[in-house]
Image (cartoon, rainbow, N blue to C red):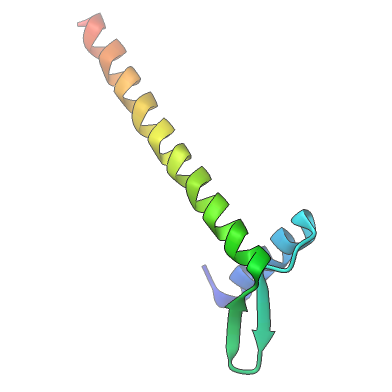
Length: 68
């Protein structure tokens, strides 16, 4: 992902959730307090999605093995 696309995605997230995730400075970016909460929550959600994918793969393999 390019830096331009990443900036665009962040801006879209901030707009969609009506929060400022980062403070933008001439030296870079810093998480806002709301941004810190957002990152903590989204990390939890992404972990759950990853776990769900693993469970689905296991179910698929089990059902495949039952056929044979």
